Length: 309
View 1 (cartoon, rainbow, N blue to C red):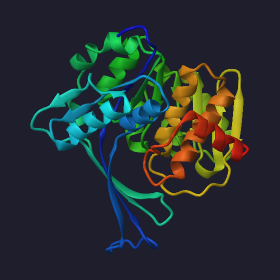
View 2 (tube, one colour):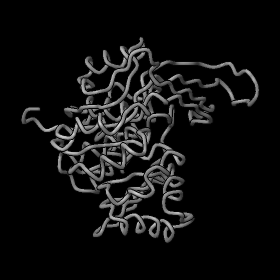
View 3 (cartoon, rainbow, N blue to C red):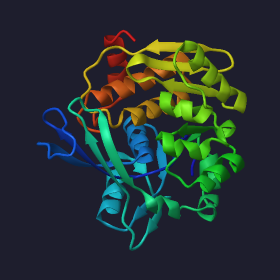
């Protein structure tokens, strides 16, 4: 593994098929618009962002030995994202994600076909123990099987960052939240995980405190256009989000997590870390691609300064 520090990600990788209408989205009707096919998956997206930010990153996922799987591997080689430790299955199709955006670029409806990830099992992840424990941190997403998530966080000694992905998938980790160093649910995911309805700053603090009481070290709750809330045992921070022009909201959360991981990897303080994460999401929101191919720390810091974050 060598002496160079790196980040490990264990999570999903798939092909994204994204459609966006030219005008207001009409349900139960054919909408003229634009479709794009790109590489995606929460774990893979975070990994690509980190690789583009110059971090040595290793992604452990499950791929089919098909055209899409080979495309994901080739793209990884091209951008410097190491996917070589992944499980490659013959005669299986790589995961796909189909999303319909509205005219503003926000996701209206999505369907994910990610059953192949259920083929990752405990014996497989056991083989990756040394690789994962030697990393500076390990990011996991809830596309993984529940038993694999539970085994990893309870058995491996490393700082785990959790990407909750969605309200439904977040329920997998409800009983093991205390094992995570950092979690970044959005408002709805935080409500599902804490059973606390978030309506104001008081209930926001109560939900975040619930996670700290379970054992989480750092809680970041993203609030969309309102901003970002942070709580740990020593600090409470709220940063309001500036007005920006959203082109595609699909990859903003993945960029945010990559920004958080980048900041932790580089030992930045928490307020700077949150601003880097927000800046990464802004330069992604303002780009038509799920991942901004021009993302870089200089671009992020310049955007933070321009927006007076």
